Image 1 (tube, rainbow, N blue to C red):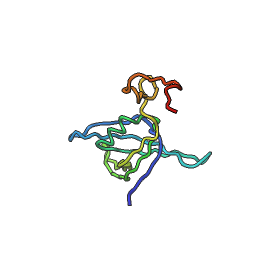
Image 2: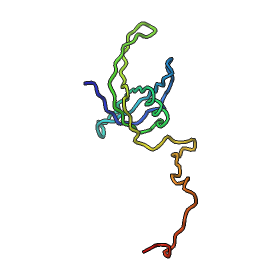
Image 3: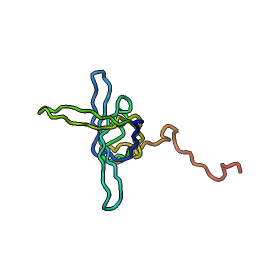
Image 4: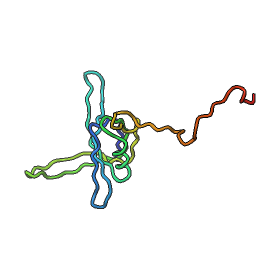
Length: 132
């Protein structure tokens, strides 16, 4: 079974690109702390998401965002320009849950929208208007 569940914060902003087939790919790194006190350490886990999930992560996450991801571990071996072999390990994200509020705007405040803006003007009632 190849399953990975991680909760952590994004180390930097999401990097997104589009493939030749016009599908979005987003790459990001999550910092996950383990242990306490002097024995605490941080693991940095590279993650990759595709298609709609990649677009949602790109739109709603930024450096410092708290996310929970579920996916599978992927290992690949590649050769560098100087001929040495390297191993790369990352998580292919299949599900993501955004544990923070929406992405911050330019003035660094969370985007807020009035949910009652389409209901018209506010109606004021007095005690005499109540039927009981």
